[in-house]
Amino acid sequence: DAGITQSPRHKVTETGTPVTLRCHQTENHRYMYWYRQDPGHGLRLIHYSYGVKDTDKGEVSDGYSVSRSKTEDFLLTLESATSSQTSVYFCAISDLRGGTGNTIYFGEGSWLTVV
Amino acid sequence: AQSVTQLGSHVSVSEGALVLLRCNYSSSVPPYLFWYVQYPNQGLQLLLKYTSAATLVKGINGFEAEFKKSETSFHLTKPSAHMSDAAEYFCAVSEDYGGATNKLIFGTGTLLAVQP
Image (cartoon, rainbow over all chains, first blue to last red; front, side):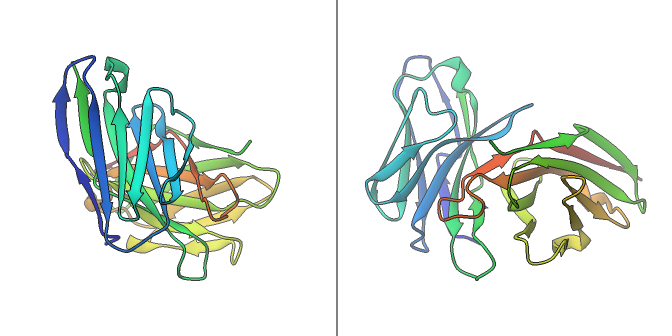
């Protein structure tokens, strides 16, 4: 258990509305990530963070923004949701401990439907 | 740029049969490779990872994978399938070769069905 909690787990929203997904971790990991999962695409990186207020874009960042004001929380915001953003969103952390290379652990996912 | 290709989006085996899920990578230097499993409506769970320490990597639930540089492959195997192995499996490569940022590039996944 990597101590990752995502909220909400399920959300239906209307096109054009803002949506924020929250990822909370309990183990003080420095690196946090947001991925989206779509059929036929696997998982694709949206944004990641390497510390408080330090974030960078991933492969599919258009239409998304992120914030990290505390080590434990990483927020993903859709400023104006579109139907193409209907997806399953996964938060992940990178565990740098262990001495055998970094390991990425995933949360349980947030199912977002934009109607 | 690194990438992984999973051959076969759907694989069906009989209970007790060998499981073989294929993954080929593209990388100019030794990669860091991972296999994850996803059960329905759940997150991804790490099965195993290759970090250049040994070419045969053993993971959880009886799975193992062999890194073959000459074939640029990292196929996942299990000698005897169980019904509980039915899930989707993802191969992934670390974009920065296991560096601190550890951004993963995923394949498109293989859905494994196990028939009784």
